[in-house]
Length: 304
Image (tube, rainbow, N blue to C red):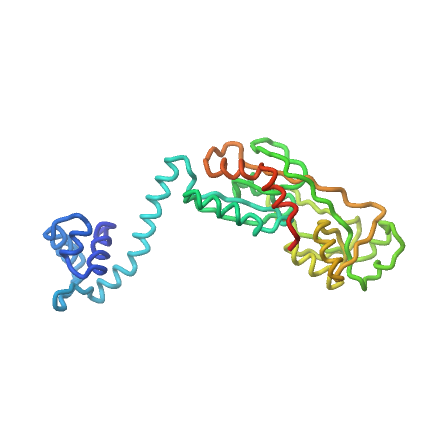
């Protein structure tokens, strides 16, 4: 191969600084070494890479094509070198954090800002999961850490967990829905006659979970909590919402809360991680997320 990272780095320096001499000084080489490297590359490639315009060395059309295509490779090499140093120091190059759909991702932003303010360069990659998808994301390798994994941990081991707290739910419907005036507590047989709005479980390998849905009840599946709230406000169906959200929407007059004969139980949320993961970034987030004040911010701040 006639194109090397060293050649691309030399081309880049000459292009930015305008001369072989300036590039040599920047790269800590003697000017003759730069001149020789360019001449050798031009001989091997069979075409000139630079032309003289006064005192400046200017890329030819072929040279510009080579450098423009090579600059992403230079950036990738620098990034790879940086990531390698991070891994060697114990800090992961990337930390993948999955957040349960019940917790708005923006509530994690102050913690991420504090992490980067501490000088840590680990790349944080956020995703949202629903129900069994939270546990599946860990088992399937899509996430290193999950915030708000609901219910019981699946069998098989390999995961570490810490309880975060519980989320309570209220049955919420549009004020104009037929069940809005139904005598409380509303029995399951009456609810079963109306379409439910349910979240799509994001699991890929575990058995999908469905909550708040009665046997035989028609349903509409939506991708997010925001879509679920909007659908219930629009009167497309009924369902349980986290109590804070239901209270917030009731205060605005967009939904009403009703008591049911079979209330949905509270759900225990967990902080969960891969037990084999020993990186310092994961440890940092685990320690911070287990602080009571941080948990309160995640679970008890005003709804969306």
